[in-house]
Image (cartoon, rainbow over all chains, first blue to last red; front, top):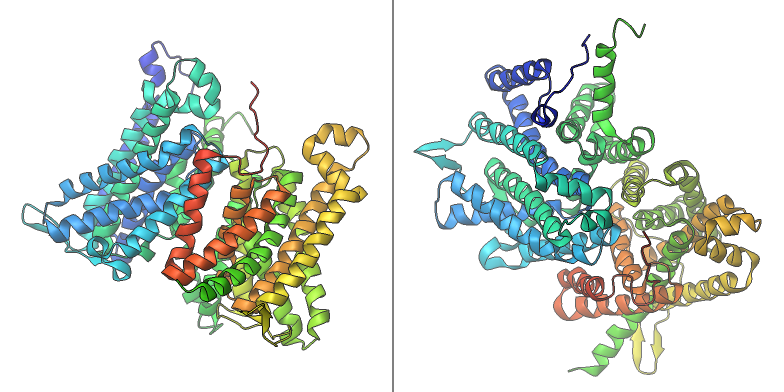
Amino acid sequence: MRIGDAKQTYEADEAIWTTSTQKFWFGLSLLFLLVFPFMADSYLLYLGCLVGIAVISTTGLNILTGFTGLISLGQAGFMGVGAYTVAWLSVNTGLPFPVTLLLAGFMAAAVGILVGLPSLRVKGLYLAIATLAASVFLHFIFAEWESVTGGMGGLSLEPAHLFGWSFQSDFMMYFVIVPLAVLMVLAAANVFRTRIGRAFIAIRDRDISAEILGIDLLRYKLMSFALSSFYAGIAGGLFAYFYRVVTPESFPLSMSIFYLAAVIVGGMGNLLGGILGAAFMTLVPEALKLLTSALTPFYPNAPVFMSPMLEIIFGALIVGFLIFEPHGLAEIWHRIRRFFHLWPFKN
Amino acid sequence: MDWMFFGEISLAGLAMGGLYALIALGFVIIYKATRVINFAIGEIMMFAAYLFLAFAGGMEMSAWIALPLAVIGGSLLGGVIEKTMIRPMLGESPISVVMVTIGIASILVGLVEFIWTADPQLLPSFLPREPVFIGDLYLAPKIAYGFLIGSAVLIVYLLYFRFSRGGVALRATASDQAAAYSMGINVRRVFNMAWVFGSLAASLAGVLVAATGGLSPQFGIIGLSVLVVVIVGGLDSILGALIAGVFIGWLETVAGAYFGGEYRMPATFLVLAVILVIRPYGLFGTHEIERV
């Protein structure tokens, strides 16, 4: 149970954590993330890394779609730009990974600005289709610009390295991916405490009103595109270092839909929702795999049905959440929290 | 330049474009009535084509019985989707509705893989096989007859929506739902019928396209080409769907023949991008003016 807390300053109102309970739980989760790799087996570590990458990319898409109201079907394409930048740089220059990752982010951001340019003229679904076109072009470039991208065969790269350390194992990659994910989510949370973040939200709520309030629509929409694809670029770069091979087929349209689904299932315009959605959508297929291997002794052809089941569950999750729980997992989370806040009073 | 080759390719492309026009018509009917951009249209086509495969191949019915059955199955599917999954989303933001149709597409792909496996299939051939010559130009018979059937249905649709009560009800609903409702038009029924008739057109085209090019769970990709068609033509314009359908079908085939298959999508999406920048509402679409 928690007693209502009166806020006395604007700083307190805008703070990321408004109560000491929240700080406590945040600290506890950080501790868990720190201890996790030492306790987990290699499979769990692998999952942890996957979720970390998904969280970064989903948070990026959440900035664009959830907070600025611009739908993008190009997230996988932006991730591809980041991944190819990292792959090309590490094959051709041997720069250490923090530099290549940063460059991957900026490269993706530049492409994002280019793709966002039509957003002044078109909005809503038309914009979604414009980003779809962009992702078709990007896929085409990945597949055809052989001198840079290696064509359909793609690029293979060395493990990430820094100060003579080589980040070859999932264990080492975990300590790159997860701290970055935490950092980038916190950075996003801070963006929404500034003028820029508030401008994004104003544009989402009503673009015309926002413009009348003095928000330069094109500038802030492009900024949102740049920020979102920066996140996608970093996620793509980590993807490249994690799998150490990048091909045009690594970033299909279905991946863009996956991230959009993660944002929706998690809860649009909610950073916590983005995290929950990314983790949930990454773990559901894995849970299904576990279930399948558990069922195989009894139904020998269970693995045959796994991939169709996965498609059906994926679709059903999107449809089900949109119809029955439009605010996503974040809303469920809040409901659980409310239950504890009101616990002894509400029967 | 070999004009003969160009002519034959163009002819095949135009015939394919005729089928695109039919699918786009289905898309536009659904959009006009319910304002839903249906990303699942390719999957509805695929589902109908698999139904045809089951009736004609599995149960060995005559193709001329299997075809109507498959088309009816596809349109019923459209009606059920509207009733169960699109209606609850009425009034939600367009993003959400589009995502629902994407989810439906995923469910349909899964169902098809579940029932018919993910392997590519060939439909039993049911169209005449004598080669067709127009002047000196050869046209593959499957494409030619597919085009003939497709355009016949297209003309029936156009006449129906121009002159029948149902067509007037659809157009009235499209222009103003509340006014249509107060004039005694059953708007909910129009929504449902639009999905049924839109899916019917798509299903027929689905069987015809699958008869020429084979069938697999990836068949739904064709929905992306149709998306290009309707954006270029204008989402709510039947005329636009026809013209853009034929043009995009032609462009896709010509680009594929001269530059290779990997150029098909970029070529059509380039047209899409240009249209989005200079005329976002499409060549013939209504320019929506936003009122505050």
